[in-house]
Length: 298
Image 1: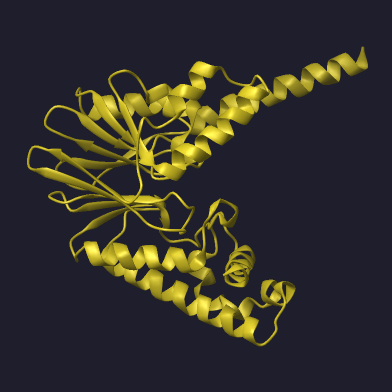
Image 2: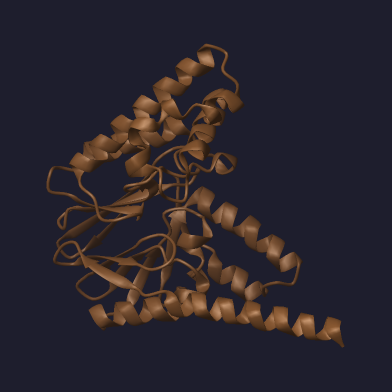
């Protein structure tokens, strides 16, 4: 009897916490231009472009938030979603694919994004956690290797791959006339970034991705980061300078035969930036560890 009660209590508590977590998620909207909006909820920032007849959507956060996100988009426009673009494969950016994907929606991503999502979903299918139909709806129907361009009236939407940055499948999306750039998780505004080394990410690729973005944008460009508040070219320039400084210091430590534990324990390597950038998902110690491991792998 006692064991049964404890099992019931654990199950009830788990359900309550999950429901409470969902209720706390509020989808907020930032207007970045006449036609482009940023939606923030739980997970990666979503980009919404309201075109002449349809909506171009970038990323979709988690499956369980899909109804809330759909409601937020409906408050912006009654136009249907025609294109859904994944900036990369992580579930906080692509987890809602199956809920948004339909015969009327084309799902687009880099080649590697499809491959990685397919591998993840296949493992879940093998465990009977999802259905074959769900797996199919999670997968991009259109993929590209380097660049792809979309046209909507006077707007040109350029998407371009950046190599081995946050992952091996990252893409940025630039709305030329609206002058808005969605950088996905190649940019964590106001916090240290997460570089997924196991999925092809690297500190050198991350910095090069920023430099590529800086070549595209101008002083008036609004930037949608993967996480954090909307940003600008000036803030991105400051951010990449920080990354280069930290990379240089950790490379010097490696050249002086510092071990991973030495670098993790050496707060001086990042202390100039920790107050501003060290309070996010990635702690200063974890960031030093990631940079160290990435530089040792090259």
